[in-house]
Length: 143
Ligand SMILES: [Zn+2]
Image 1: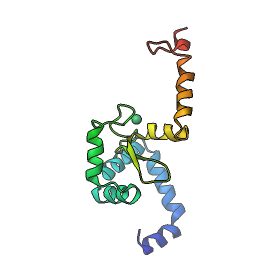
Image 2: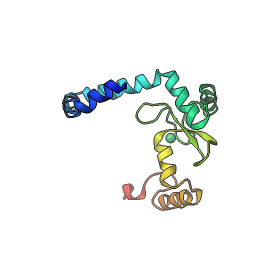
Image 3: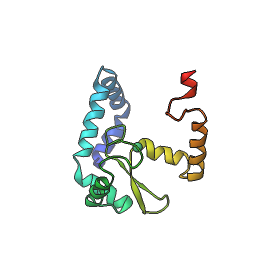
């Protein structure tokens, strides 16, 4: 946003916010706007390249190579994009630029919630398996 655009926004913030709220409240507009933004982001190669490159040192070619190595899906689950329709996330070792792979946002968030700790994840798996038969059916649901 330009400086003049920013000044205009700040001077008219409440009226603009009210207009946006009103627009999003109409049936289908929120979803239409989210779909438009998801499409727009995927079509912005310069922004994608700069974003990936600046944060992780990953070029678009690197990203495409990682994606091909993972057969086009998240390194953990079968998702081909994150749940909002955006490209998969570049997963890296925290505090470094070392790339581990591409993850959907759910798997990426899941690892973060388990503090990227394999021991905690293994304990979580053990905990879940106590309630699941070998065929993967939840014992609680079957009862
Ligand atoms: Zn995933």
